[in-house]
Image (cartoon, rainbow, N blue to C red; front, side):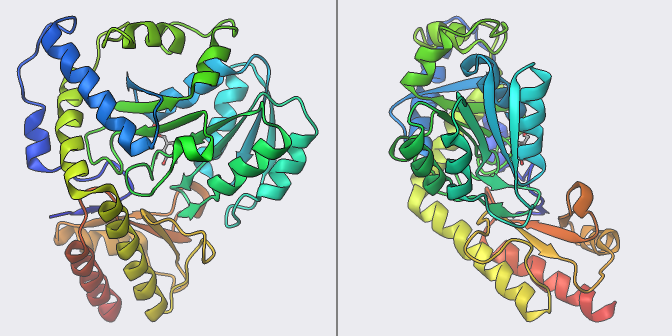
Length: 356
Ligand code: PLP
């Protein structure tokens, strides 16, 4: 049963937690290397890629940084329409790159045409974009954006943050022409936090070899050398890899299409409920996330009071993020969450609204 309707960390199934309790092995042993490779190969299916998937002992932000350090000499464009896109922009700035920000209002999807117009002016080695803005519940049209960028600037690499959507929404890395696609363990994969997964195209890997000052810990050229031997330069997060290996079997057994459909149905249900209760969605129709719904607090509900009420029933939702606190609230429907969990939550929310 799901209790945490917050967009990560999410509830982890007991059997997945148990998978972490397997005994340690020497990380350079054949036994562990087999598990490491197996988990990474299975993960390729989630990313819809034939390319490599790195498993890093870090949260997703670590791989945002890796993208910037490994594949950009100098100039990068950050598309920003939410808090996590803004973080990626900052990551680029703090790593000393020349970064241009292309900002959109937070409730507006990034426009493929405007991005193409900017990229056309030339000189951008890469572009960063967030697929699913966890702060706003908005899903950017990444497929169309990638297509537009490929048309006007085929050499510009495309980096996509799918921290709160990969495994809950279909993102076809190879078909869409994405060069780095990254996620974190604690969201749609329903694992504990601490692991980041990132798939990288061959052309990006080739470029990395020419980039100086890639650092050490997130040097993907170094990681690739080790990955080819089913290993990693530093000690991996072994317990999380055990859990990932186990969880990927569960995810693939559900079937990816079934999983995406489950998420989409829950999103639709939450949107309909909000509509029926005079609450509107923050993101426009057609661009709403299927893993987290951000609802405008049109009724002036005290979100902290509501959460106190929900916690008595062992549930919790998320307040708005940053500047959207109390102005919006968020209901996540990702990972292990099932429709019956959502029904239970909505029933409790209804009870709260009636009495307040
Ligand atoms: N990107 C998005 C879209 C996120 O939602 C988050 C965290 O919530 C991050 C990046 C940062 O991920 P992490 O906390 O795993 O570093």
